[in-house]
Image (cartoon, rainbow, N blue to C red; front, side, top):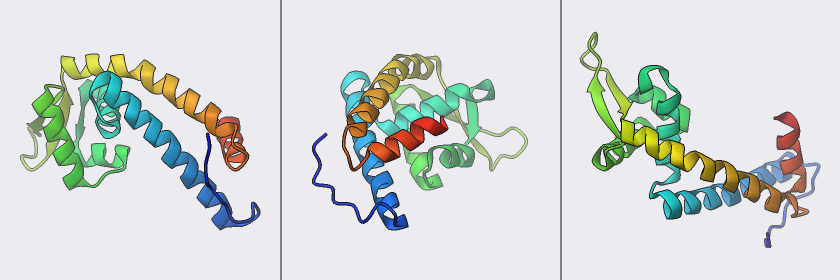
Length: 148
């Protein structure tokens, strides 16, 4: 990984945070590119499908899904709309509270998520290995892997 990254001194909080952000940006870019190229889904779509596939009954309230994947509720509503158009999920009303809306994964969504999971894991590991070879990012990668 060749970067023009110039971090502040390693002992500063800002320097540490800048390295974490650089690592995050690099890894997210690699994941997004691979998921789109190989499976036709974006990173947020994959994360939504993964969250739904792990949820009880394959469904989550929209706000809970938004919280799990780090998006606002209006953004996750649009995201679920895209998943619905693709046949990977649908929206359902809560039977007890008609104001509550759930996102529900379909069989097609489970299949797409399962197919993409191996790519996600492989690319994540590869991106962390590459970033770990960069002297500016090696410490951040090592710290993450130690805590796992």
